[in-house]
Image (cartoon, rainbow, N blue to C red; front, top):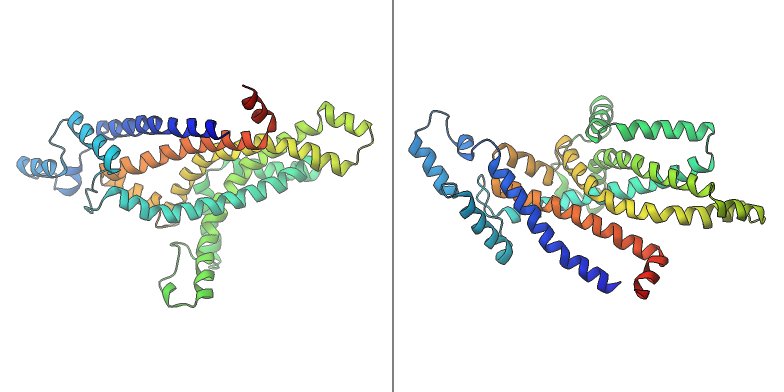
Length: 326
């Protein structure tokens, strides 16, 4: 297991570098020029050249790439932001905390709702409860997460005025007591976490229900029932345990989608996370920030696939035994 994990971790490095290189090339090939953001369209040519020289855009793309690659490999430096002058890595790290909070809480909520409803829907397969829950989850599965966010925002923040509509804390957050700060943060996170959690609970529901129904109709379950094994033991010990194996790998594969979904939800609810940083960086043609954020998103995809494989190996002893024998 440790040797397998070590090989996969080593393999991440070249994959991420290749992905970051593709992002670098695509960003520089995209139409638009950072100088057009900072200057009037009628600005003199030499003024545009000065802006390009300031950002290093007067050099060839190959030269820019080699300097960028050297900085990334040896200093983990993606360059300085065109708009703020701060290191792009520093801006991404600051914005990463709110994104991780939103992602982790939404993942927990989505797994909880998806597993519970998926198990009960499989237990009542073909009945009214199963049909109703499946229809509701299909509705959320087909609806974009940002649209769910807009609907919840309009209902609970605008119409009913029960919850705040934006940010992760109120203006007077630091003046509150410790318990008050916790409650204030919870109130601000309810809508975005619920939005993303509901959206991905439909994904988890689909997998766990389908896997449970398949397990309950398998031959070994029919044989257990013929031997008189208790229904509860059959359902939870046999069917549920086998159904969780593919579901565990699904969680790892869902992490990149969850991460990208969090970026969109942050824009909807004006959260100070990576979504807002990437949005304004794209508007400003802020190449270093766009490349740094895109590389991190690509890294999350690679790590998500790695975690899916690792979780599956841990959960399924047959794979561990096969690896030892080989």
